[in-house]
Image 1 (cartoon, rainbow, N blue to C red):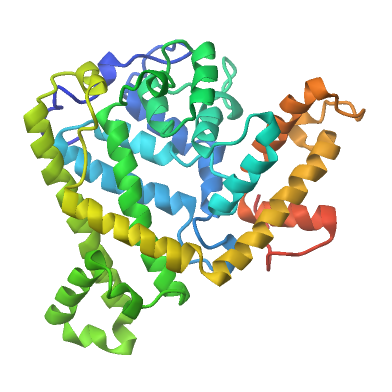
Image 2 (spheres, rainbow, N blue to C red):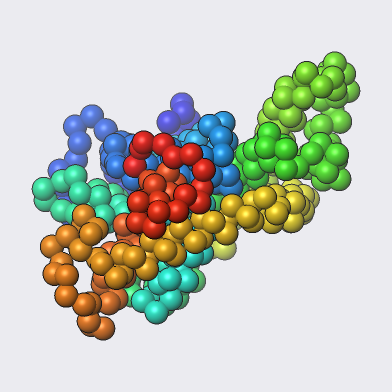
Amino acid sequence: MGTEPLAPYACDPAQSRGRRFPEAPAPTRTAFQRDRDRIVHSTAFRRLVYKTQVFLNHEGDLFRTRLTHSLEVAQLGRSVARSLRLNEDLVEAIALAHDLGHTPFGHAGQDVLNDCMRAYGGFEHNLQSLRVVDVLETRYPQFDGINLCFETREGILKHCSATHAAQLEQIEPGGVARRFLDGTRPSLEAQLCNLTDEIAYNAHDIDDGVRSGLISFAQLADLPLFAKHHETVVHEFPLLQQPQHQRRLLAETIRRMLSAQVYDLIAHSQLVLAQAQPDSVDVVRAMPPLLAFSEGMRRQSRELKRFLFANLYRHPQVLQTRAKATQVLRDLFDAYMAEPHVIPQVAYLESAPVTARDAASTARQVADYIAGMTDRYAAREHERLTGQRLLGALGLND
């Protein structure tokens, strides 16, 4: 953390609400630092390097992955947390873990798994991230999962339906899902990660979109959030308009756009906090959201989101690849449901037909297995099972 002491509304690791399974404190690390280290050493975290955002893994080595995105969110989060005197270590832990439950093939994977799981409770990637750290990681002899602190787990569970929140509340009364039922808020560190996540993916989707050739400088000129900084950079460095310098022009424009959003978030949040004057984390939880962009920045951010949705996420080339990825995962789900014993985690199941009573638990195990796959492993496994190669050249990782 920085030289400034933590604010009274920041999470103090010494006052953590604890872990699901009690453990002795680490001798050289705080509870939140220990969480961060456990996340970095997890299998799910390593797999993020081959899980992609918009462009799939086989489409190029320079596009963002879930791993690079998580690192960017953590870097932005720590910078803002330092200025607001929040707990940087907790922000970093949440940021690094927030996408652990993401499926292969970006949001297309989540959508198809949710559709496949509709009769068995659905699929939410935020809920899956919590499931990864609570259940699916198998690193310790004393418990399943990696036994993170309440505050880290709370931040990981960014969204949750009322139905799933009620189910979690039955398992863990007063736990991380309670706020979705009683209308309270998470810590400021968790609120901050939601906002830096937004800053990061808006910026890197522009970068990847231009790099891929799917969106152009001319299209971006209509976006105030981009155009303002683009014009300033061109005015200061006119030579960057030459074709050989387009990469520098884009990078500098995005850097300034990122900085503007960060500074706006800090300044506006400081004003809100000064007015609200929360004096504890418990008071924060009972208040409306306290971290936010100014109205002008929120408006520009919404315009950017609409632009990216229309021109990048719904681009015909992206939709074509998305359709193939959807088929890959749907075929895998159907194949594993028909023969669940071929999945390593459930190899102990008998090969007899799955009964209705067992179908829901089997479907959840199948979803867990597919959600844990990387893009390349899912494509290779689909080719092995079906004989079809739908998604280009395949790598060797899993």
